[in-house]
Length: 267
Ligand SMILES: NC(=O)c1ccc[n+]([C@@H]2O[C@H](COP(=O)([O-])OP(=O)(O)OC[C@H]3O[C@@H](n4cnc5c(N)ncnc54)[C@H](OP(=O)(O)O)[C@@H]3O)[C@@H](O)[C@H]2O)c1
Image (tube, rainbow, N blue to C red; front, side, top):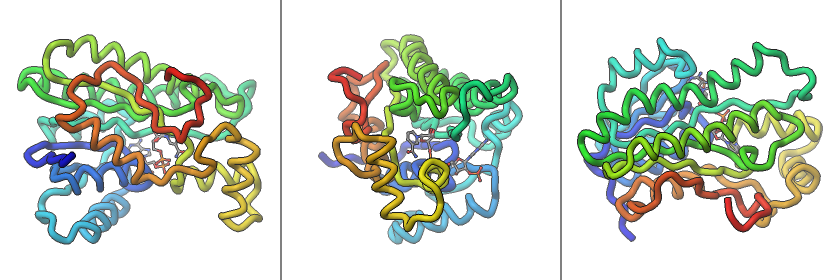
């Protein structure tokens, strides 16, 4: 399959590092023009530079950055002013962290909802209508194995990712018959800077990375069938496929890219 996303305009929220950056890189590699995003101007600049380094033949204007806090309504509107239309919206922004469920207060629950659910809802509300009008579009919500296997160490995170699956199904129904697909990707444990911190919180920060990763997989993610963390580019490849013409009949779905971690036949 040759996937060509040229003439497609894409945004990946929270993409100055980790999975978001890998998704942005793979979309750009397939020819899309891509907006990267994060709250730090320095980090988003570095992200654009790193994509340009990896894709030396790319048009220099194909990847741009918008620095905005997309967990807020103001941030989403500021983005909309700069980027009026999109063909591909990847709601990748998400936060996670270890916290015993009895210690999660109302403010923390609200913060997780604002960042992990409302950021995707707002951006979809802003951009979906234009996609429907033009008769083509892709919305991808980056969910997690935690959406279907609620992790006791971060119940609030799991709940927000479950909500994202339902949100996906709802927006897909709103776009029915339009040529626009809306899907979520159930991402499994992936090797990102955020996860390095998370692993250190769980297994301690005194081990070399290789040993810490093995201990984390053995003790905390024993169901993984690939028995390793996923590399971010591997998620990027799944997203590029779902953004392509080849995925035209997949909508309202939750697609697993979890290394077989979720122990069930259906998502
Ligand atoms: N890593 C995993 O194992 C894993 C597994 C399943 C699902 N996921 C999901 O995959 C997505 C990405 O995870 P990751 O591990 O790549 O995350 P990460 O390494 O923590 O990166 C988060 C990115 O989001 C940006 N960001 C944070 N808050 C923001 C805000 N309010 N507005 C705009 N940008 C913001 C960060 O840059 P700044 O801090 O500079 O803003 C950074 O670029 C999340 O939705 C996560 O839930 C991850």
